Length: 444
Image (tube, rainbow, N blue to C red; front, side, top):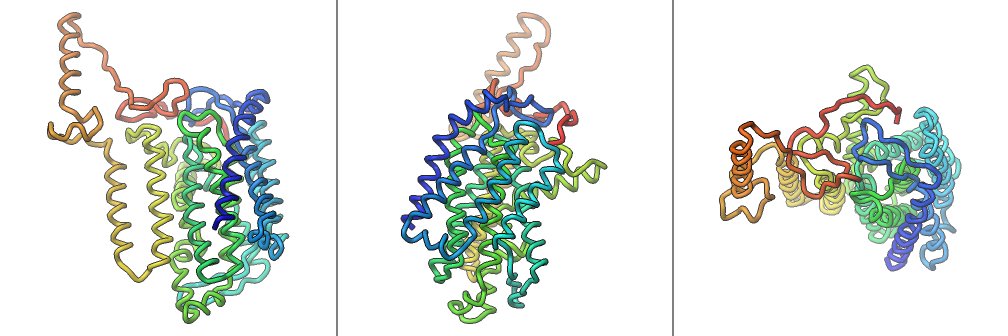
């Protein structure tokens, strides 16, 4: 664990220190595209943050290779090299896209090629544990196709959710933390060495996101761009493939008193999509809804719009920061709830706790839709717009304006707390934040 923490800290430090120079380089290189119709920020912001994140990935792998215990991951497995080669290719395509706006189909082809590079070096799915049935061995072509599909889906799911300051990096960091706990338990708790590469990938992915987040939180000074979003999506997919297709459930059965119990122990991870995609359930849901929505309208699935989940949160009346925190909450609930259930699947307390937290999340989600009557003794516990004193002062100001001018004053829309007028990615006011439903001019 100490070596994992050291690798994490080095990755965080390198990513954080590189982001500042990368920002200056992006400005000098002109990687500051014009604001599109679907964007929520108000001034051009440099991209290419993926350069710093790729530097953190290389630093993390380099440090882990020189540590006594983690060095065995590189000696016994070719998966770290497969990850680095695939990540380098997808990162290069992302850098070119951030600068020159590559076509969506070309990026899709590059994602498939990157996945194929990892497959050629051994990072592929060999078998699938099916609940209550056992282990299903896959042919070489089946495993390769399933691996490529998983990589492409995960990359695009993370790319689709990258729409608000700090959203994609924070959600992937939460998913990586939950995945680290799960894979570390498989490796350390059951003594299965094949889970060590996935644990290392999750630790490095956490470091990449944590090092970039201070520069990317609202108001963001730099965006990760496609060079960053596709990179962290590929690393997350590589960790899922490693522990899903490489860890033999029969080895786990030695410690879980039978193959059926071993499969049941891994059941919460394999139920939704056979693969451990529950940790990115929110980005996956956003991806599926976007494809259905665009296809229903007769548009291309790659056509840009303003119907993503984070856009809906802003339309409900949430501020930029609150919308990001709500997405964090749901990501953490799903990811850590899955991990907790996989540890103690026989208890109902975990299910009840998840249900209770889900109810709290729904209340927070729908809070801007109603203005409850707050007792005066509780006004100090709620935001200012729910307080009687604030409403009374606003009414008095309107009455005074009417007495002076004799005409009804123009309505003033209150500005949400924490909204920036320059770098802000949020409109103002408690109602719809996107009155202009223009179509995006870019295909991204």
